[in-house]
Length: 127
Image (cartoon, rainbow, N blue to C red):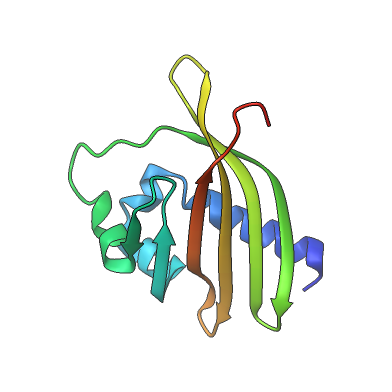
């Protein structure tokens, strides 16, 4: 797959992870999250795969819409790709807040691309 085709494929998967419907679909999350998945959240907290799988399982869970842009991809080797981008949460008023620089390490497996590592870092609001 070409770089631009892979960028689009991983962008679609990454954005899928921003949606509450995906977060609440344990089977889909298990498909997307690598068995050794780890996240260093914007808050500074470390999340394991099992914690992420449980995070939105409760009824009444909510997640503000996320807007993501400026996706860039670096292929690190065969079957390994680093995706970086800028995201922000969108309030009901349309106001964007919690701008975050994000990076995700994706690994190609026999079942498809799976996210192995994710990190969010607070971004300068004037970016």
